[in-house]
Length: 378
Image (tube, one colour):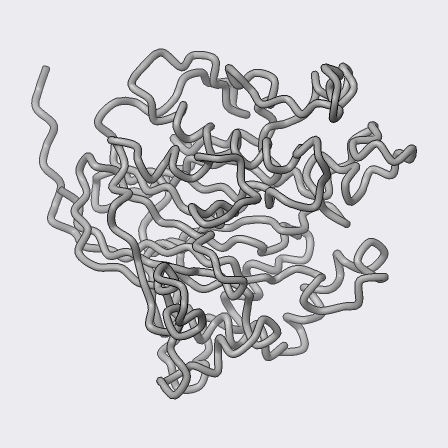
């Protein structure tokens, strides 16, 4: 077998940013279901200051590949193009414009109606807790990937419809105090694992593929003793453990009909708001450790910020936090194979530092911070 050609020594910045660009940031809660799908288009059209701040952060940090979480999937409104053209391509507060000629954007399960009473409140609404992924309208809390490098769409895979029941050892939620499944048999048979989606987006970095393994697991809260969200969060994270495993994983199937996980000796970055932290008692124990302690992942490098440290001065892990609610929730985790970490950080300036006002509160930009790593292809 011919030896793999060594890649060019390319250095690039990969980032993940939960931008909070959904209806909950723009209109009152009582309007989320009726008017939610118009909220982001209207905000974009009106030069909303929160969106300008998001663009300024991106222009300042200048990632080469960027995953956006909580960016509504509203293709009919063309919101991704409008965000690029009207915000990223325009200088924000003196920052240089930035262009991403390649994008990946696909449907998600949030707001996708199910025909079942998933929250067991006696009603079947198809929205909120009764959607396949919590959402008040189709596409809420979506995802998008922006890239300066070409995207190999033929090699890219999505797992929006992979069934939770098909994950070996799935943590099926149970009615508290019984052996009865929280979800009915019919609902469990159709329940997708992904609350949004799982993507393997292949970036062509000067001839060498880099797999961006993107997801946004459900928060492990907003449920009850059955812990349906905590269990789903754990298994959404575990999907990537199975996907990168060297062992047989033909049980995995993608939305394109292909089976199996990632081939051996591949360069990848697991990215996203994973809603899991080693500090959080809400997570199923060991949820994020599944990745941080995995031998195929460089989980010992932790991006930090001065602003996070100052935000919770009594917490020794505060510099690692990526969310205003004092947890590390957002990750960019590179593979042990083929990637060298050069640097990394969290965009969270401390009070008094330049651009600290951009993260002064959630309404100013987001309750999450952009987290980045600089890597060299090897």
